[in-house]
Image 1: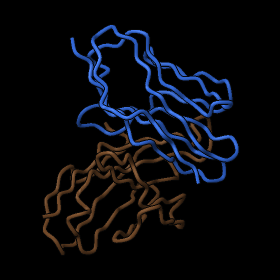
Image 2: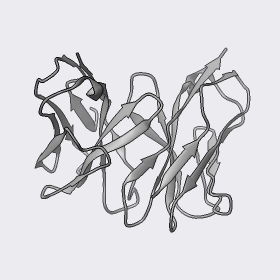
Image 3: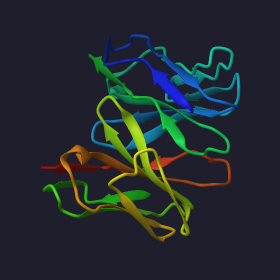
Image 4: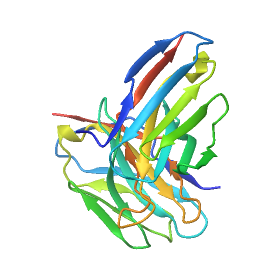
Length: 112
Length: 115
């Protein structure tokens, strides 16, 4: 079945540091890939998505590129802020299955 | 106003009690989902519904039941709560058509504690 493996946390960085959170997936066919973010005390929000190979999703300074050859969708940001502190989930949905499969989440803490 | 609302937001109950968690949405989406979140396990799908007459089990449906009372309402019930059902529960919706196909929109969550 489909699965998502993402970088174990927690991750602690200083403000303005570079961020990479790794995500790899196993799926048949051509899934769509997502990053969701969960701020403290809130539900999940879609951060960005990519629906086909080599697509780059971007939002709020975050980027992720759909790499079919390495089955990866790593989340990156060049300069993090304290307000980026949250839990980040990588997820996929496969055409025909149409249910989200989530990774276990990575907690990110940014210190001033 | 929130597009996806959940009630209650917090609930403490005792083992063996019946409890219902409710979800309502104003997004006009046809699909609705219930997930539970446990530390280190991410989100796991309990039940999902693609329309009012379509209910499907997810990966961890044992001990839970659902009711889709209308397109906008999807309730999750624990018939006899047990402590390992202590978790954060999320409702989500999605639209089966249009530009946001397969994007899911989440409610704020219900924190359930079973003593």
